[in-house]
Image (cartoon, rainbow, N blue to C red; front, side, top):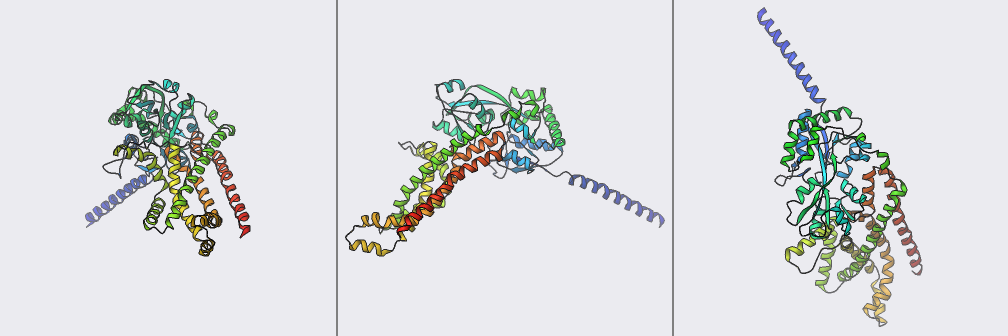
Length: 502
């Protein structure tokens, strides 16, 4: 009996000790939650993008690198979708633990974040059409006045600015190569990994000259997270020394001799490794003229688009009031179609889709619209549908008796409309038309997706280059107010003046 009691006591003690140790392990894992990795899966290959076989899954060399880092750190890595241009601000706000998405080490960024040991050494590659014979280098491209496409806010764009090369900045890395193949730009300058993935397999394109420039990709962390940064530095070095880094890069065809420096000369890519970031801060006199250029483009796109919308809207409105049934149906289909699709989708189709349609059907006419023309046409078609409904309501608000009175005086239908109905309808239509025009001012920010640099795009480029989001943002908002508020005053003035005769 005593022996059994003693054995039971020992078993209880062992069970208690096991539970204590188990709790200790649980507490330890509870103290190590997943690390939140922020990147933009919309950015494209070969960094991080969606798997065509399984769109719910992200693939790319940075996805595999993040997984390898997680194994080295003994922590699970949790992906967080974040717009590329917002990665640094999001990191500083604490939305993620680190950002890794082909982030170039630059002085302005190094002033705001703590960069890790570089995990990739990149160069820039110039790409031209396969039949291009006018130039064989960036210098000769500049000499002939060629226009070069690139990504906004990148080292490639800064190099083009330094060399005073005519450029066109894009938000995505696919669009520049598509425009190049369509003949809208003369060349494209982007990071070599992007060129390898998108340009090299394209038979319509070719590499021009040797890679130029050099920079580094590194993991961005908050400066106060020094302990985590040191652990990531060590993990990257272990991956480089073990050959795992090379295995990943060779799989994605981006390994080259430049990467040997990662093994031979490990170094922290922080502010000490780059020029003084204080020299990169923008003064008001430096960035405000650029904002004014963007504001002028906003005004130009808005005014031209509104004129197209007015030119489309009035005939459509008259068509909807027509006694001819097919004409009414066609006008109704136009209004419902263009009011029912997003303007962003329409801009993409007009700019990128129409050339493909023309090529597919072998049309003899060229549908390769310039970016400005595509923007004006897209907005004009979209806002024309809204204007048509405004005009239809305004015309319908005039009493039928006025049509009948004019007819009794012998006036024709067209003359009655021009002299009697339309002047009165304008007073009714003016307020909603002004509201539409103000809305159009703000919607012009969408044209940056087809490489039109308007005010919002200019702000994004300047803010990303300097991280002066508040200061430049305030100047941008002021310009928008200076453009839109007077429209409201003008509308009210015209209403008061034209309404005196009522």
